[in-house]
Amino acid sequence: KFWAKVLSDLRNRGVQDILIAVVDGLKGFPQAIEAAFPRTRIQTCIVHLLRHSMSFASYKDRKAVATALKAIYTAVDASEAEAALGRFEESDLARQYPAIAPSWRRAWNEVIPFLDYPPEVRRLVYTTNAIEALNAKIRRAVRTRGHFPSDEAAAKLIYLALNATSSEW
Picture 1 (cartoon, rainbow, N blue to C red):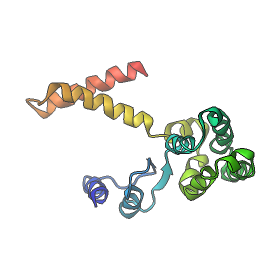
Picture 2 (picture 1 turned 180 degrees about the vertical axis):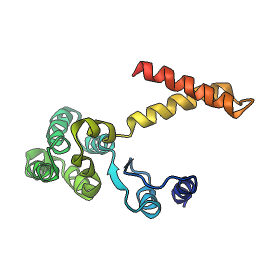
Picture 3 (picture 1 turned 120 degrees about the vertical axis):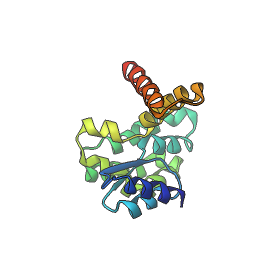
């Protein structure tokens, strides 16, 4: 209900469509997006999916698992990605960690949308980490001030925080 309210508020403010939404496992968020903006493509955060996969692997095997999974999300297209997932499913690593491949299969329809885009765009939409980091910087700047005398003062502070962040990046 919460996400449905947030998205309907966005719609009421004039947002007409969302091309792609990158989600990271928030319950009910993908369904709320589909209800409010039915043409939106839902993309799962690959970094979060990788972290979830790594939680099943022992420390000594994490590098090998990450390398094997990288072939999936760096594939040229969805059919090559599916073939890479199939190769992973047949590997010793998949037999050693049987929960990893099914977690990718369950999320498959949300894993592959970004493969339709060129590599430059993929880098922007395969994770929510950059957005989360940016939001954290803005929250940190706003939290240290407490309250603002006007909306303009808040907007100026957010602008300065974004400016400082862009120079770091």
